Image (cartoon, rainbow, N blue to C red; front, side, top):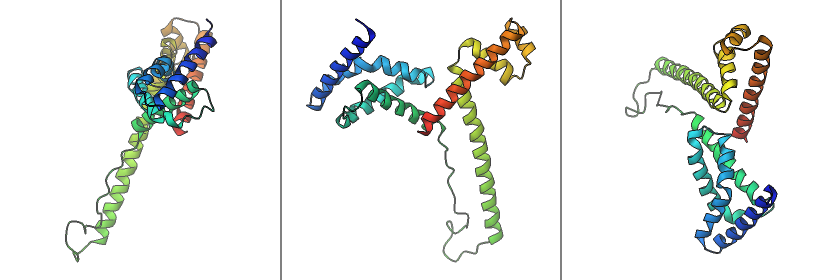
Length: 214
């Protein structure tokens, strides 16, 4: 049986099971799970760190179960399932990199005392300025941490050879000649490898960023 026939058969079984679930047979959801669990896992493996794939896949199938009544059959079920899984992946990255807002205290000083407490306008302004500086420093630290996390996630999706080239040339600042000697290849070969590795890294980062912003 060809791959397309397998897909068609799985789709037909899943659609039949979907109807049974909507009719109250919750056990039939297992048919949908079996039909698409490998597909979802493979798709998420390209988008997430390996250690998080299973958890996000489980979340995606919970979302899928809750969303079954809204399926309109305007697109193939497998495409709809993948869309839900990809939204789960995007939510994973949003949660991972969401800025933790620092609590804003009562900078006027009126919160601790009663009405009529004297307030030093200069001290309040200084507190406000200090708070803004603290917030800005926190945002900068968070931005650096986020970029580092994105880079680490991207590097995890590269091949060992690509990771080696990026590490030497981009992260450690080695020259092409040094990288070639370190990896035991010619200068022309290392230039080609570096170009391709950069392209793959950029492609992964751009696609993941678009997914997260969608």
